[in-house]
Length: 116
Length: 115
Image 1 (cartoon, each protein chain N blue to C red):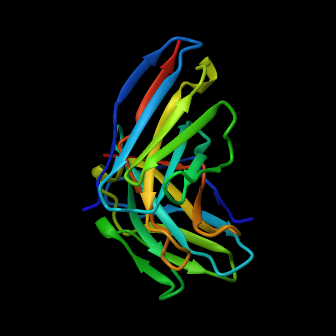
Image 2 (cartoon, rainbow over the protein chains, first blue to last red):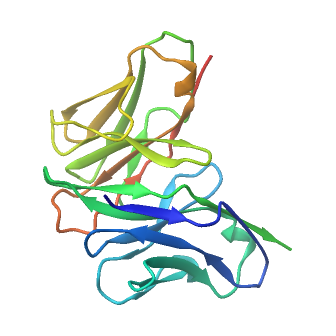
């Protein structure tokens, strides 16, 4: 079964410093991976996705993630945090179901706090 | 832009009541999903549907049922609400098949409180 593990439930950074949100995955085949973001009282928004093309994936708002097969990781990074980045971030893996179709399995989330 | 709408942002119900949560998407997506979101647990899949009148159990279907009579609409039903069903409920939709990225589009959520 496909699964993801988000290694930190809370991360706190200062504005202007780098952001690193860690995610490890488990998959029996080449995975499709996503990062979603949820701002307070808002719905989930796709940040970026990896679907076996380039291993370095660029997303919205300056975020990027690197797929590392040898480390089974898909960490999310941003060079310089902004106050508006404060949100909850979810690492997600796609599963292909035997009956057809697919589903997403979510990590437990990382709450990012950005301080002045 | 894909739009997924949910009938209520906030809902308060009493224990034992029957509760209907409605979700509508406007992009002709084949797949629709219902999740619940709880702190520290992420999103957990309750039910999903590949097509009209089709439904599949997700990871936590107990206490819930669903209905999909039209392609654009997917309803979640709590037959007899209980306090442990107090949660945020999220609906999502995606294109069908297995070859696509699987990206799902989410509604704003319904925060349900059962007292």
